[in-house]
Image (cartoon, rainbow, N blue to C red; front, side, top):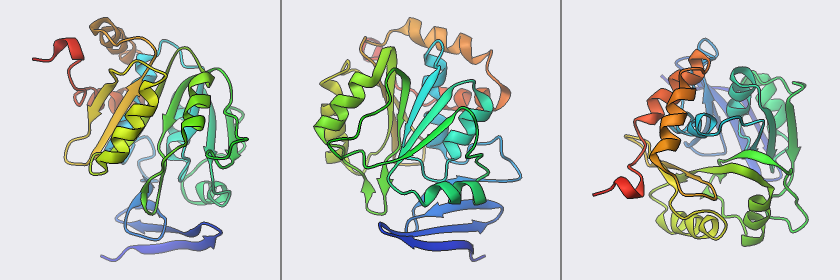
Length: 252
């Protein structure tokens, strides 16, 4: 069955297309790669497995009051976090056209009191991230693949992470030079032994960094918090927990 086109537009950065097939609504940037997806009839489920992996830091942090989303897409993660956590969400993206698209096709309330949506170029030397972020979730892709951030931007992001905070990013393993570069950049500001989750049957790897080394007690505390989460968040995190790789000290 051919996908139905719900909306197609072109902004200064290229095409934006929203399609629907089999009950799933997807966002595309001019190619077959889906940038966002959700099922309106199952709004409490995260379609992408890597979305679920990016929910792990929500359990690993004792109380994430402020979450930064770098890479907004269709607003699927913002919507899920607003509905299933009490966190404030500060989302940043380059393309202003995505705000109305997220409202029209992905169910996001742009006027939600805990949502701040900023459209800006993260690579610009004058861009400043919001301060005191407990979690930073990075999902930066365009039609050509992973977006590289300048060292200066990564340094400013690191300064914006609150004590005890974390940076989590989605990577494509088939772009290994970009993966190595992202790890180099973040290891300059955080402990180099990231917490790694390999998404099965896909090329996504989600890596979570913080200033201190990870230890088994962190995972035990996260699992305890998981039991107190809302059912949709618990389901998402519970599945992703199985994808975590052994900590450095546990490897053989």
